[in-house]
Amino acid sequence: MTQRRNARELIELKNFGSNPGMLKCWLYLPTIFAPNTPLVVVLHGCTQNAATYDHGSGWSKLAEEKGFAVLFPEQQRANNANLCFNWFEPDDIRRNAGEALSIRQMIAHVVESHGMDTGKIFVTGLSAGGAMANVMLATYPELFAGGAIIGGLPYGTASGVAQAFERMRGQKAPSVSQMQSALRTAASGSGSCPRISVWHGTHDHTVKAVNAAQIVHQWAGVSHISDTPDVIESINGHTRKVWLDESGKQVIEVYLIKGMAHGVPLSFSAETPLGNSGPFMLEAGISSTARIARGWGLADDADVAIAEGAYEPSPQHTAAPSGIEAVIAKAMAYAKPGLVRKAGGRDEQGIGKAINDALRAAGLMR
Image 1: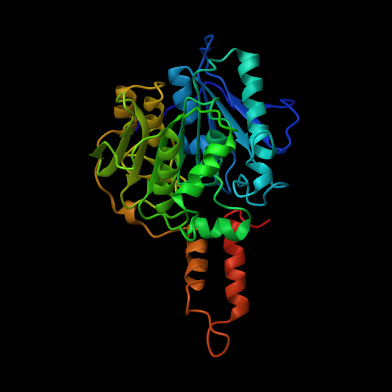
Image 2: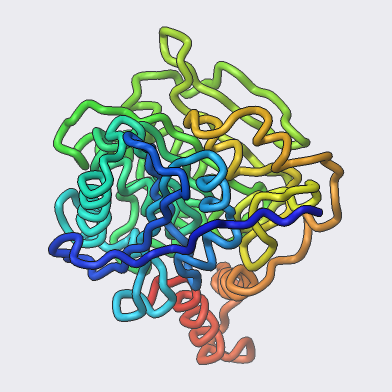
């Protein structure tokens, strides 16, 4: 196995704007930095920070090799005890407000300071970061050429902790028309529709895979395309669905990663893997980082082949949930109807504690 190395480290940016969401900002610039360089905005998941997510996903390594820049917004514990972006707080997901505006200000600052290509700005993220990536695509669609949502949720479907937890479990979601209405009004009718890529594990018990389908329904209505995919194919044992517009251009794609739990699908069996194994960085025989970058024109087929190597199914695909996922799964089991009894049954105080612990671990309770 050959180790990829970065030539530079992440640098922290300050004074990039009024920063109403009180976020931190980190930037990676490749050694060879040309004018009109593309920019990728990467949003970490709960319990992570910019550096740990970058180390696992490999975005700055690929940026060094291919010559694009990467911006890493970072949550602070003062905003969320578990370092989750607040995708369920109305004041943080509106255009020109809260965390969404902070991220917009970061992008404007680096684009102006470094002369980046405004036509090649992209955003991606995992879990709460995936949901916040969808927030950015919804509230500033004119800004992004494309976005990739990994283990995330639809835009504007939760207001507060209780609803957020329900949506993560795939319960009591708004109707498709309501979700589409939320998306249409998020950017005051800008009319822009970035290219959307959705990645989700079929065995994700933290954010149920039904959320991937809901994201597709939400964006399909705004993009004026059918709910029925135009292409269905198998890639490295996983299912990829594609929706095309009338001209045959790809508008939406979904990768359903067979047997994968909650995390970023990567391939560590390659001779030169892109990224590193760790919490929520999962072996899947497919490199989401390389394939997402290729879809945006920032990498090519050779980069994908190098990042993935030979694919062989592994027992790791169906490994039992761990960490935050196990906690949430336990709380969800407690919450099932009929399992809680006031007398002669489970201890209600213990049940409440388990659920509260799970909510805090998921970043849904401060």
